[in-house]
Amino acid sequence: MKNLITPLLLVFFATGLFAQGLTLSSTDLQGQITSAQVFSGFGCFGDNISPQLAWQNAPEGTKSFAVTVYDPDAPTGSGWWHWVVFNIPVSVSELKTNAGNIETGLAPEGCTQSITSFGQSGYGGACPPKGDKPHAYIFTVYALGIDKIELEANAPPAMVGYYLNANVIEKASVISYYKQ
Image 1 (cartoon, rainbow, N blue to C red):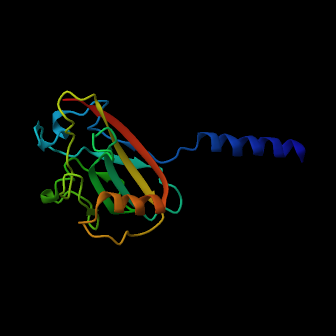
Image 2: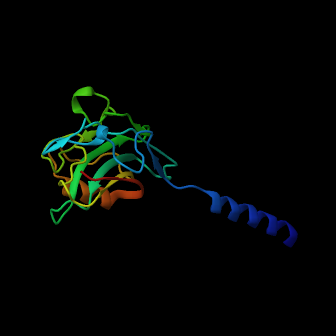
């Protein structure tokens, strides 16, 4: 009996060691933000196109997803929210390139893109002050334990963040940098 238990324990622990948690990736993002993801306005001259984002290995109990893009280096004292998307159905595992443009209709049906620090819904690209150090842009997917966050599209990012953090099971991030 002892000889049978040892191999079973090894298999159990080995699969646990190689189990992968929630991951986030992008075919559009590399280590640096490109002009495609840079804001168009506020002294920035980019295309303001949200990048493709894909996630896999959602944890058990996930009922919906949310995605945020946050710049902790913005000289505001509280950072800058560039994209806030929630109520993404559990059956969805990707946001297509330019899904952050409300007019394209590329965002998953049923999701909400609430206002950003720019004061508008949808994606607002990178736009650090000229001459400032490179800013980190943190793209995060949240696996949530609730089907829906009961907030409207005009909900401020901090309020959405409260609900995300109160209901997150697991999250994953990708960071890209940009300097003007």
